[in-house]
Length: 500
Image (tube, rainbow, N blue to C red; front, side, top):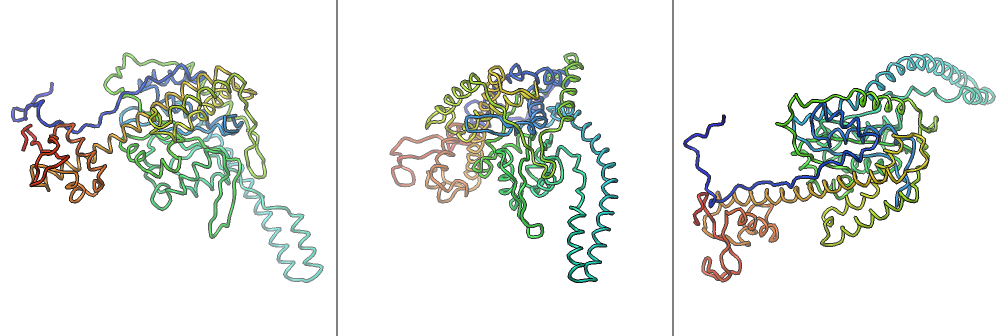
């Protein structure tokens, strides 16, 4: 039982109220729209009792990694990759890792097996490379000894020797904290289809790749990969290189404080990086996860594991010399395209000034494409060789895209309110510690207040927020304050509810 000490001040409803960051509750996750992924997601949720949105995002992005090398999907704006970026926000203790692990297990096993095979291939390559280098050194040595005909013969011998044997590709299919250079190197010498998966996504968002020096180029590179553009890299030592046909799926799980800072970064939004993510912050399940309610579905997990292994063991269309993926085209049926077009029009209308989505137009403008990508992933997970996206998959994908769009709208509004609350708290503390007058004006705050509030709109918004929570009382227009009638002014309220 919780005890209240007698010395605590009793609650006074007429006193100023705490500045609270209130976030509206989100909608229920449309798990029925996950199609062939639903059984595995519900199985993980049954084992962990975590919010179902957490394993859902894991399943979607793992499936995206598995199929993204095989096809590009038709969208209203042209062909696009099947790569999905997801950002799942959940505080410590929500069992993020426990949700991710069983869905990632087949992928981890595949990586281990490929690593073992690579070690054997590396030994063969080491021997072949030593022979090639020995022959090349011998040819060059002979060429130095002679002139004319010997040099011509050496040139012919070098051409006959052929190119340097290429080392076996890296077995890694996933990364957790890549720098731009590290990711580019892995794409150059490893698998052309990779996944960035981290249940501690704050390590990536706060790591070397996202520091002030590297942030812009990292964001640009991830935007290019999402779009299906080639990766261009220029370095003084290595020269310039361009990598075509590479794909990246992303799932970052982050805690709310990390997400808030990331979402407040103008560069992340203005570059289009953040709008490319399917974002959600499901309601917490902590305190409700009773062991008696735990459920297992081993058959569903075995089916998911088997399907993932089958796809991972299938080689996507690829140019063996350049390691460039050559995905086929996955078209939409006329019915699926009509559905997507109607959905796009609804979203477009809501982005108009004053519309429900005007505050997140960057994210909203990509929602129809997100639906097409999700539909493509669900289609190929069901049938890797499917020729078209059917109406049923598009129906499901639109429901999922709507959920993530609603979450992005909710979280964006919460982030804006949070910023306003932060400014109001800065002003409240300033009034308590630095301001000696009983009244305050907008111009007082602009001239002398916290640096973040040295603009009239921000100062007025902070004053109005404090008024809303009872820390200030608005005075009637024309009230005399410090010898002059004021159009707008506030009287400061003490912590006990009394006007100063």
